[in-house]
Length: 263
Image 1 (cartoon, rainbow, N blue to C red):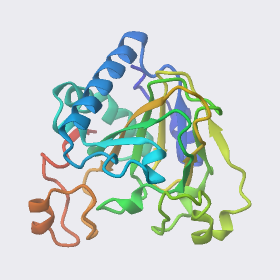
Image 2 (image 1 turned 30 degrees about the vertical axis):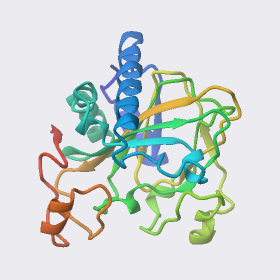
Image 3 (image 1 turned 120 degrees about the vertical axis):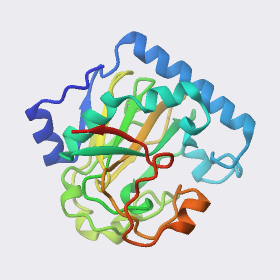
Image 4 (image 1 turned 45 degrees about the vertical axis):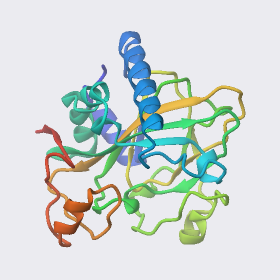
C-alpha cells in the first residue's frame, strides 16, 4: 500500500482539494479489497436492513449507484480493511490534522448504464462541520470517462460554504447554490483499478454516467478529524448516540467513530 505521503502530495491536495494516487493497492491487496467488498455488499443486500439504497429501486438516485453504508459494522473482513492505521495516516497527513476517525465507509457501485452523479459536496451531509474532512475513494475497477469516473472543480473546497444540493436528476443543481462556480472548468480523475482518490469534504465533485455494460465499483471511506464536534444533524449516527448528543459535543464514541490514526 502506498500510504506514505510526500510534501509534494500534501501541497497538491491542499491546493486542488483532491489527489489521485495510482497503484495505491498492490495486485494482491486489490484482489482482497474486491473480494471483501463484493461479499460485504451481497451480505448487506441479503439482510435488507435499510442501509442500502435498494428499497426503492426505480428512483433516480437508486440508478446512480448501488450504495451500501457502514459495511464494517457487519462484516469482519471489511472491518479489518477499514480499521487499517495506514489509511488513517495517509488521510491525516494529506488533511494536515493530528488524528483521524472513521465517519462511515460505503461501497458505491455504478451499475451498467447507471445515471450520472450530480455535483455535490460531502461534508454538509454529515453530523460534523470541518474544512479538514477527507474521504478515500478506492477504484476496484478501472475508472474511465466512459464508465463514470469522478470529476472535480479544483479549489472549491477553499471557498465552499456548508450549503449543498442533493444528488438528483438535475446534475447541475449545485450551481444554483453556488452560481459563482458555474463557469469553472471541471477536471476528470480517471484512474486504474487499485488507485486511491483522496478528496476534501467540501470540494465540488460528481461523476459521469456509466455508458458501458459493466459495473464501475468503488469502495470508499469518509474520515472525520479527531476533535470534531456535533452540528445537530443525525446522518448515520445511532439513535441512542444521537439522542444523547448536544450541539458542540465532541464526537468521540469509539464504536460510532473509531480513531484509526493519531500523529
